[in-house]
Length: 473
Image (cartoon, rainbow, N blue to C red; front, side, top):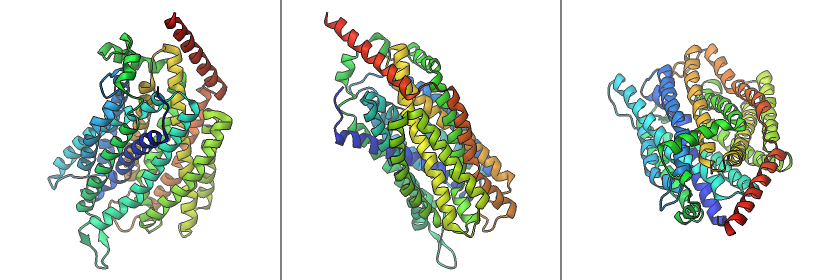
């Protein structure tokens, strides 16, 4: 494989990081509010829509990963899927926020169809995009740097969605109250879908351009093998490979738990700032705080990974998430808005730090699978992680819809009950702690320490050297 240039590295990581995370966060943050407040869909029903869509999509992930591993085209292996799914990813993002003015039942049917199609198209772009990280380079340090860039770009994408999304909604909505303030309506969400749909499409194309020198037809010719050809049996065997790694299964469990609680806390961001802190405009300020804190945490992650390895760095991030959350729970005062935002910023940035480490850990798992099977397994490893992420977010969205009903949240109401406000506080602060506790327990079954992973890499390099000598003879 060719050495990555700085331009290629940044194009792949930034383009894909923006496209992937813009789609993830715009649906995660705004879809529930869009469906309930604009179209009057019951929160429980919205929970079912996201549950069904993401569960279906999640079980497609490993299949897509295996297909990516076995794909051979003149556009390369994974790059082919990124290029041709990009416009459809943008189009379906718009469709999610473009429900027409039809009957209540028809709206639910439309949202089911739009969300499912969006999820499937997103899979066709995102799984190959993530798989490219391990395929573009086998240098552990360079992989870590790529993941850092990808995930930091994701942090910027979250800010763009949180702050920019609110601005788009307020600017493009066509209704105003007596004081001249915008009332968020369907026109605002339509503009939201169009804007982020276009950004997602161009982001994925930039990502594919960055991988143009390493995911090529010429490289595939050099790697020519009967086992690498695309077939139903080959795809099935590749899926089975995922179950040969205890490390990958442990990573999937902790990732699912982390994403579940992230979906719940992120899904009520607007409601929390509106009903609890009485200032929805502060969402943009909170997003900026997350970016600033996140930049610092990414430096901390880099130092931890270099010194302690991925496994122990994940444990550190979990503890650093739990500590400020517990402190905030016992000291919470809704009048101290800045204190609350700063503490929530710490919880969120360390949560993202843990997520960042999981994407470094999945490349370790891909190496372990290659060591076991002697086959490229970047796709199946990455897709297993995205499967767990989507499974966790699906359950999280469903549980969130149920929880909003349980605490008697009233969509669109200007004032919520004391019970509802207490429930929103609990969901925002304590729920993230549970995910990190489950993650810590999962680490007990994860065997890939820094020294063990280095041992596997050494054995892989020795094997390749011996195979090269044998082919020369």
